Image: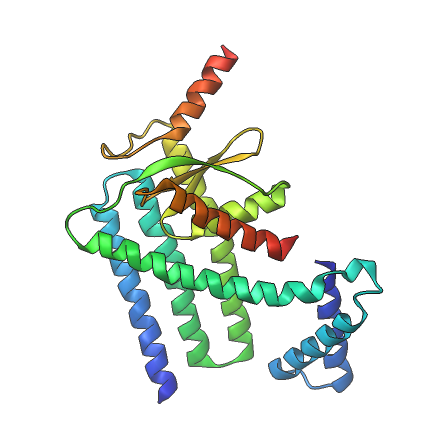
Length: 116
Length: 157
């Protein structure tokens, strides 16, 4: 009974997190902020859902697989976010008009003047 | 790393010798191995510092989960309420981490914390370019990043 409530709470929280992430994906203004909304909450929600799965089955083999899945999403998702964000930046996607500052642009400008 | 390997080996020995293959028994074996290593680590140079590392890892884990919850909540609030409170921007962050592995781990965890995303590493590997969502006070963001980095380095060094 307690376990069932715990599982439901975990699953509900995960779905709310994913829902918020998709709203963020629609509403946020530019690429990096959208990456913020999707990757982190994606990882977070996967971890919560997988914990619920482990609690529901309560078996050693499934728990081991759940731990593996959580570890691998934690390791790989930020790399994907980094790669997409960097590729987007380099291909010249405009940042939001209210972006406060951009040190990376200065850095690339310095590099260009150094090499030329 | 070598300490963890030995600890797992000792846990495996325990499980094989007692002959019951269960999670609880394995965890108990791991605990026993940890105690053994804690007793002898001063005399074996390869194991030096391992006993302190495990509690640090758990402390880091708790800290990280808490950070994750907190900043997820912060971003969720900003997404749901109509006016934008965020002030995104890209800032430089000077790294303490030296080797490639350390830099990878640190930037990985920075990207995992909501509100910060690593966009690029400078060519001389001293600076990270971090896209932060809430850049009201730059020093605060930098201090948070520093705190996170020091905790990670504490575990892996």
